[in-house]
Each structure stands twice: as C-alpha cells, then as structure tokens.
Length: 302
Image 1 (cartoon, rainbow, N blue to C red):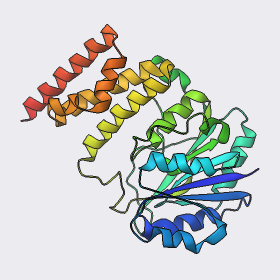
Image 2: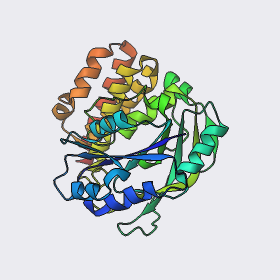
Image 3: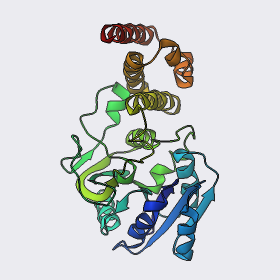
Image 4: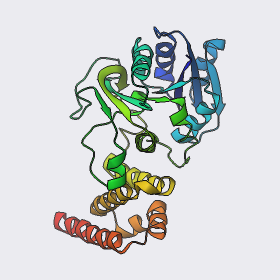
C-alpha cells in the first residue's frame, strides 16, 4: 500500500534537504514524497530541484501552512498520509511502524505519535512538559460533542498520520491558517474517527530559534488568537462540536483580554464572526463574564 509523505516548506533551506532525505530513507519502500514550497524566497527551490524525480514538487505562491497542505494533499495518491514540517525529520522506521498500527487497528482513522525535541544541530533537548505517555486506542469524539476537557496531549504537525479517507474529509481546509494549521486538522480528525496515540519518538521536532510559530514575538498572544480562529472554524465546519468550540472560544477570548486592548479583541475577525453565528444566551453570559474577568486581571496587573 502506498504511503504519501507530505512536506510543507517556507524558507527553510537550512533544514529542507534533511527533511526530504529522512522521508526518502524510510524502511518502508512503497512511498511517494510530495514537497510543497510555499513561495520561498531563499534557496529552497534549488534544493528541491536536486532531488529530481525522486520527489513530487508542488511549487506555489506564498499562502501559509494551510494552503501548502491543501496543495500537497491534492498531489497525494497514497492510502496513508504523513505530514512533515520542513524543519523536522522522520526516523527511518516511522512509516513502517505507523502502517503496522493502522493494519492492526482497522477502526483507527489517525495516529498521533510523540516527537523527539532537538536543537538546530539535531541534538536531543528536553524542554517539553507534556507528552504522549502510553499507547492508547481512543475515541475522543465525546469530548468535542460534550465540551469536556481533553485528558491527552497531542503532538505538532510532524507527529500526525492519517488514513487518506479521513484526511480527505478535512482537506481542503480554510486557508486563513498561515501557521498552526495542525490545530484544526487534529480536532476534525478526532471528531471523524477513533485513533491511536503512540508514545514512540518517530520524528524529530527541531527547535532552532527561527521556527515560524514557536519563536514568534508575543507567542502567548498568537496562541490565543489561533485558539479563537480554531474554535470558530470547528464550530462552523462541525456543528456537533459546538460545546467544545464554545468552551475554547470563551477561554481564549477571556485570556486574550488580559493581554490586549478590548477593541483589538473585538476587531478580531473570527471573534466577530463567532458572535454572529452563536446567539445562545448561556454562551453569551459566560463570554461576558470571562471578558469582565480578563479586564479585571489586566487592571490588577497594571
């Protein structure tokens, strides 16, 4: 069975060759490697050319991570799809191990596995406080439909693996996610099918100081804005997940109020769209309460 490895890249020429090589050097040999360059202005495209017909290049104008994943998925022919950020690498046995899991667990539509954190030179570092700790077959859809809290930790993009039939129900996704497209992809997959959480470090996640997301200025504010955006699109695309989306929206808006001016929050496009689509009185009451608490905390901290 064919496995598709989808690499999304934007200006990561320093790491791109290692990512592509790690995809090509899998012990499972029925693979295709799709490399999407999202309008890089560095030497990324020259690196892609070096691999010739060993890979499937998808060259496009810059549109962000979601648009890159959408474009790459259109080129995927495999029954299984593995996402890989261009500054990360797969361990050689990753695809083989994940396919074995999928074959053993026919109901699993996705598999999320742990990542080994490394520095820019590929040396292991230990910065993560949360991780996938044990092998579990899980059905987490009730969490979304009831608005509970997840009792699990989920990895970043390079730890996400899917059956094609599940990912085809998610992609193409809204292209407003210039970074952290994985946030919505994970939640939609969790809603669509049971899956597997695996504690094995089957890929490396490189922390190099130039990560497009992790090292952005004011990352705490960016996380909250992405949380609001994710909640809005989850609510819009999967109405049954409304309880979870509402809870996440209220939490992220309340926390953002602690760090931002109120008008900046109110002008957030997803904030305004969410209010238009959700007019439940209990929801609005909770939202107003969190907004007041957020502003109160900000005044106290001043």
